[in-house]
Image (tube, rainbow, N blue to C red; front, side, top):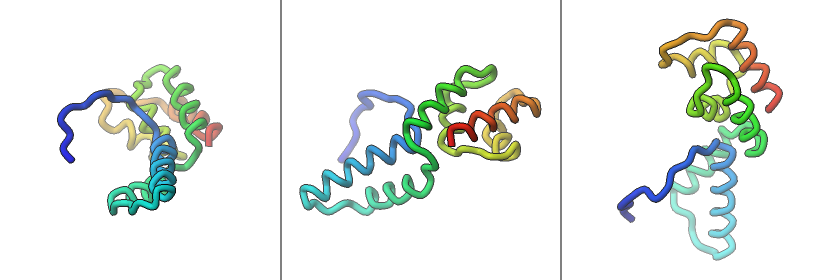
Length: 116
């Protein structure tokens, strides 16, 4: 199957991907169709790394985008990784042209922990 053109594009969190993959899995099992290796591995990966529900992840993204120095791409990355320490958060911001103060890092971690 070749992709000829991208029809639409939107950012989604890993918990949302997990929900979509689980629906696909249920449809395949309902039709008694075999799942491909890639689909099985994708489902395993999403189940292993998704640390919260899709509703909480989306609420976290909305809470984070209201902060200063927060781009939507970074908010989604934080929602996918759910960092719990300053070092993990600094790794997410490593490629940015600015650095965050300790108070800003703590504020982001506080928001993440409330949405866990």
